[in-house]
Image (cartoon, rainbow, N blue to C red; front, top):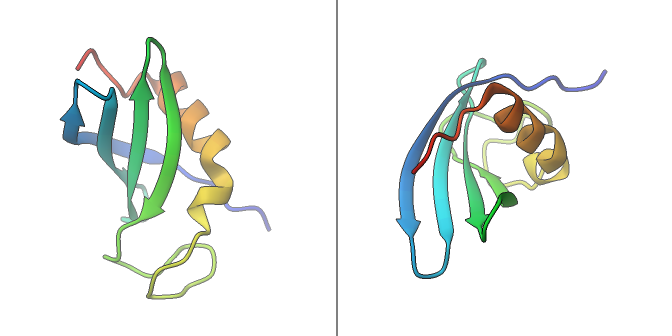
Length: 89
């Protein structure tokens, strides 16, 4: 069964205007949180996703660090763009 992600909230956590890097914390519908690292030169591009260790991974159910969400960067980036979750920062 394919994992279906639904981002419900996206909050800016940190930014570096000099390097063009932006860190966002995304909350999914199942309360999973992940850190999404974007670059903006000049368009938004997702460069990395890693899960925050608040709840077990929704894919592998591990409660420690895993790389499962990194395999779904295209889907997550498309969802952020479609929902227009990144406002002008």
